[in-house]
Length: 76
Image (cartoon, rainbow, N blue to C red; front, side, top):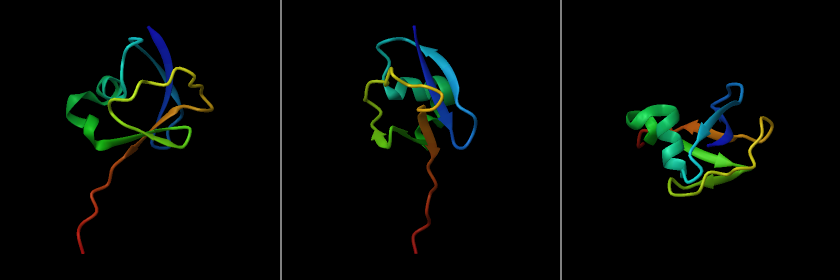
């Protein structure tokens, strides 16, 4: 297991243990569940992470993986 730090919205960073071969999609499913995982965008160190990206292992409470809820913007 690998420990990674994550932050959901503006909450205090938390840590979670995941399998070493997990990708971002796996991490989102573990945190948010399969129903809600698609509602979040993932960034780390200012860079957008794709669902297939490897989970960064050098996370800290000061530099966590950040999940931001996607907002559906109505068309004008």
